[in-house]
Length: 610
Image 1 (cartoon, rainbow, N blue to C red):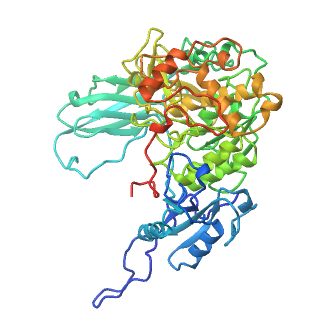
Image 2 (cartoon, rainbow, N blue to C red):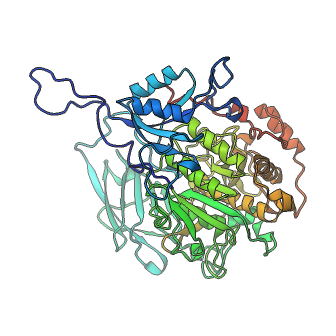
Image 3 (cartoon, rainbow, N blue to C red):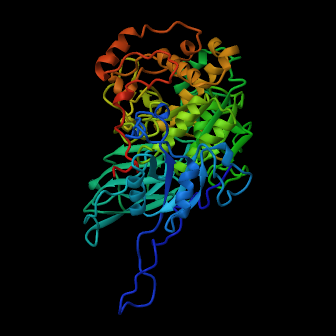
C-alpha cells in the first residue's frame, strides 16, 4: 500500500505559511500563524461519474471547457512555493511496496492528490479552478460508537469551591469476583464524575453538590464478559462502600451454554440466520472490514489471515486491535469457532482487514477502498463516519461500486440526520433496532428504547440516525460479539447493526442462485441487484416511520431465496408517498438508493460549509 507520510497525525507538522514578518521591537523567535493542513485535490470528474453530491457548473458540461488531468494539477501544485504535495491516493498505479516517493503519481489517469496548505490557499485554489477541481479538507474519521461530545461553548460550569462529597464504589462480577477496568460514571450534582475501577474493583468519585440525592444516574460499563449496569436516582451512601453487582453474559438465559458452545445471538435469530441450512457458510466470498483491526488471538477470529494496516503502511499490525471495535464487527460477520462463542453469518468467507483506527482520515479510507478494488472484495463493512460529506471519497465509493464492491455503512449514532458515508446514494445505509427482553432490565441498554415498540418487542434505537437515506435496519442494541484478547462484550450502535447486513450480503453472494455462474461477474449492476434483494427481503419492525427503519429488517431466508417474501407493494407505496421516491428497480446505471434525491444537500468543496 502506498503510504502518505504522517498518515496518522493530525494534518501534518506545525508551520505557518511563509516567513514571519519582522517587526521593530519584537522579541526574537517565530511568529505564530496558521499551520498548513492536509487537503484532498482532484479534478472534477465527468458528468456520468458524479453522484448528486458536489455538482459544479463544469461537471454539468460548460461549453468549451476541457477536463483537467491529475498530472496537470500536480504540476501546478508542485510549482507553488506555499503548497506541499504529499502524495497520491486512490489509484492502483501509484502503489508501491514501501513508502511513496516524491513525485509518484505523475501522469496517472485517476486518483486524488494529498497536499498541505493553509485554508486561505485552499480557498484561492478552489476559486481559481472555477469548478474544475475538488478541494476539500482531509477530515478525520471516527468509529460510530456513542462517545462523549465535545462542548459547544465556553461556559462557567466548574466547581471552584463549595460542598462536595466522596462516593466509594465496588464493582463485583460473578461469585463476587472484583472487576477491574470497569468505567463508572455518576451523573447529577454540579458536574458528572467518572473513572475506572482498580484491580480490586474499587473506585472513589468526588461529586460536587449538597448531598447524594443530587446524583441522578449511576452507569457502569465493564470491559468484557458482563452486562452493563444503569440505575436512575441511585441510593448512594457516602463514607461506606457502595457495591454494584454485574450479571455475566454467560448467565443470560437467552444464550444457554454461552460461551462454551457456539451461539446464534438474538440479532442473527431475528434475521432467521438460525434457520438457514448449515452448509450455507459463505464459501468463496471476500469480505473487508475497514475498522480498528481484528484481534486474531480470539478463537472466533483466528482463521482471518489477510489484512493491511493502512495507517502504518504494513501488513504486520492489522491483527492488533486496541479499541476492540473491529473485532466486534468481524465477530458478527464471521465468528467461526464451532464449539465456542458467537456464530457469525459467513464463518467460511475470506475476511480481509483494513486497519484504519485510531487516527484514520479520508485519504486513508480512499486507500482502504483501493485495497478492496485491487483484491476483488465483494462486500465492505463501513462502521465509521466523518464530520461531513467528501466529494473525493464519493468518487472512490462510486469507483468501487463499478468494480463490483458493495459498501454497507452504519447510519450513525448521533440521533440526527444520517452521517456520511452512509448518506451516499451508492452505499447501503443501515439503522439500528433493538428488542425488548434481549438484555437485563438494569443494563444501560434500557436507555436506548424508543417508545415505538411493536407487538413483537422491536423498537428503534434512540441513538440511531434517521432520514430518507436509511435503506434497512438491523440489530444494534445489546449485540454480543468478540473483543480482545479472547472475550465478549454486549455493545450498542449502528456500528453493530451494519455487520449483520454485511454478513447477510456475503451469504447471498455465496449461495443465492442469481449470483452464481454468470451472476458472479463483478459490476455495478450486481451491487444494485444485491441491495435491491436485501431491501425486498425486509419486513417492518417497530412502529417507526420508514425514515428510521427504511424497508425494515432483512430476513435471511427470504434474502437467500429459501422462503417467499412479504408483499412489499403496500410498504413501497407508503415509502414513496412519505419520501417522494419510487420503488427501486434494477438499472444499467447505478440508481440512487431509496430517497437519494432527498439525501444530504450538495457537498461544498471543503466539506465544511465554506
